[in-house]
Length: 199
Image (cartoon, rainbow, N blue to C red; front, side, top):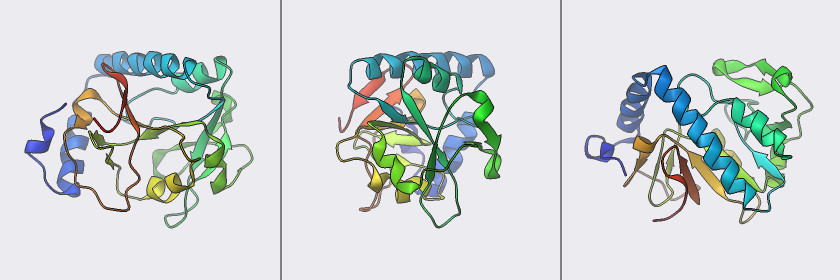
């Protein structure tokens, strides 16, 4: 677990520190971590009866790579990706059918261009790969602050693993959390792979 938590107390301080640290990661490290995340995710999914995965397209310095989406499809899995509707609504979802199915969207995101399946489609996922800036040992996840996943994750299927995807240094002892926060039930990091939570 990281010692980042010794230097930050509020969510805003955490976000600033984590975003700054992500900007400092070199491309070679990013690529190696993305490959490790992909290998660990595929190995975990191969051991679980999952047919549909809710995932995301990493942008900027987010951990992971779009290559994971292709690898999930190659493994025979259906992949759902989020679509931002507006700042007050939960995410909608659409099927990922290949790199050509992605288009540019707001906030520098890439989204699937196909038919929108609505917000409730998240409930079809047998496992969810959730982006975040950090996850703590209790399962508290720190996002970027827009609240999209906070509004969407309560609609996930009961018992579907919620897997926060972060760098190793972003798996920390304790984050500031709220009672309404939806806790991750797993964390995925490049070195540790998929770890059940809480620990």
